[in-house]
Length: 398
Image 1 (tube, rainbow, N blue to C red):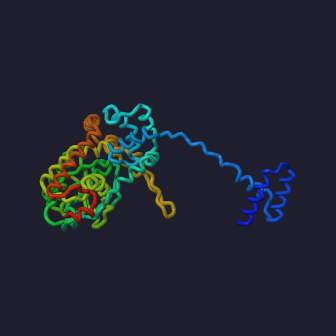
Image 2 (cartoon, rainbow, N blue to C red):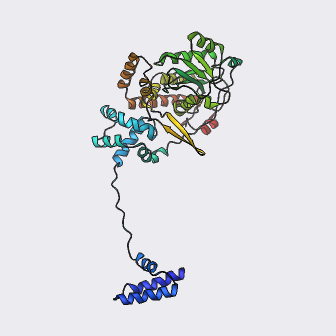
Image 3 (cartoon, rainbow, N blue to C red):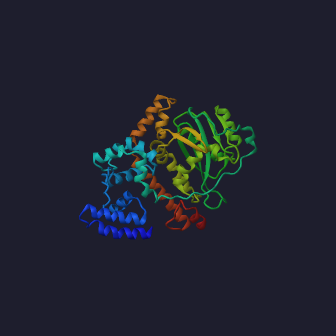
């Protein structure tokens, strides 16, 4: 083939300067007779090297740098949500942020932001997302008491259409060492709407866990119908067991060492606790006060009113793969008010709170209080420039 191509180069040099059709025919007859190749194929090869490839007309970019800069700003305000969760926020919150003076963009740019699809959002944010790598670490609670034999087990199948059933879990903030007393987060989520609340406690005593659970119940805008927990001794105890019987609450637990039985709260443990506070060891009352200040104010408002979640609509197994279909992402506030299971006066109060909030200001306040928390940790440890999300660094420091 190499020899044929070299031969073809010589024929091409004689083919194009030829003046008559007869001369070109003789050259083609010579090449085809010597190589045995098809005449049409040879003509195509001769002309292929002389014709310049057609330049493809470049499509005009619809979402230019100005649109991407505004998108990144909104993405940062709403805590780096994915495209499917950010898309509904672009439709409802861009104009509010413009009115609040948080983003200064022309009306044309705002209109383009609201038109972007979730896939386009992810594509435009691909480069920026590369800088947001967070590490995860393993950890878990201790086994519960023998009282768990009296508490029925609830598996992953549950009725998600009724509002009021809670999942609860404890997240430890012990750093690399479980020795001594340290801060723990009691995290709860409502299964149907996803409404989340958290409370920090010192230690893991039954009294502190029970007190935190009652404080959380006061803040939730709906009536509780049941509580589902893991087998941690902070939950499986006589105090909570008798309280649920007295209040008419359904008290259930998961199977031991089966985290998927508490899938709803396990997801919130990462997005609402670990992603915020990292893997540092918090063991002072100053750190406890700062964390509870966040849990009771800005963090709960930001997560419940401005963080959309996607809810599984159905799933179908096709061969060896499972195809999942999700609903449109909605905030926890939207899901709760659309449930028609809470009083109208509560809906109006939630709407009033929503209209009074500025998501960008909430994000700034959260960042400021987290900086105060990290500063308190640095002063305690004598460290500088800590990375609260790097478990390897925490292990070396502790």
